[in-house]
Image (cartoon, rainbow, N blue to C red; front, side):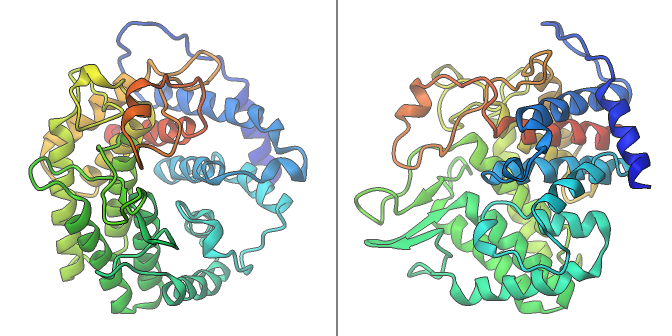
Length: 376
């Protein structure tokens, strides 16, 4: 069967590329978003030497985030389109389902849980749960009880990128074990961060706190990809929270507020800009934040976590815009480098987006997976 999947993959890579144009691209069937995903995947594999050697299979977190995005496409299609190639990479890492992978090396995404969902191999469960509980024991907290991404002198550094993985991980462990306190920890952390970082007037969130000289100062601005992380954590938590629980209800309310705030700062073409708190003219349309927001809006609408058709329309509009943020070779345009405005908005106002920043590919793969959801 693995050999058959490899043949299918080769066939995919030989698909002719979809010609890029500056005109609006109408999406009428599955073939077009799939062609875009395949083009992104092909470019991703090429840029990593086709993962030919063991040294090629390791990298920063956005490597695993791209694998997660491709496995999400498989889940939407209910077909192992990308799983066999990702399994080959994991074998070169010498990963087995029963291996314990430290939570500390997966701060923003979790390839082991994504593989568990794809393979349905129960050997993943015990190490995932044990590492999650170790994380709960060892994590540092602010004076309010919010989890710190980094804890050093002079204090606790909060980061919404970390919040989303921490919270969704605890919810997933609760789903696997049935332990209610893990659900509560997931939602309590989102509530704590909301009280600290959410602007009550705009509904937009700061990226963190504790990154400036005064440890009580909030990070400035409202970052596009940061809001992609925020909505990701909310939606992936809702996927496993019990639907009749107060935790599900509270997380759903947080999602509704965030989604409504995001729709207010989406531009007429469908994009979200680098700094969501600024006029459109002051920062560029940004592809990675737009891609993540679009997919998780589509996913939330598909699951009926948010039901108004306006969310579906916003997601589809964003995905349509993203067709123009790829080169014919599969490189992604308009993606901001990290880490966003932790200490100052100035870099986000002045810097130009590099071609093919590695945060772009997973975000666009997610976005086009969202288009497949909306078609269904």
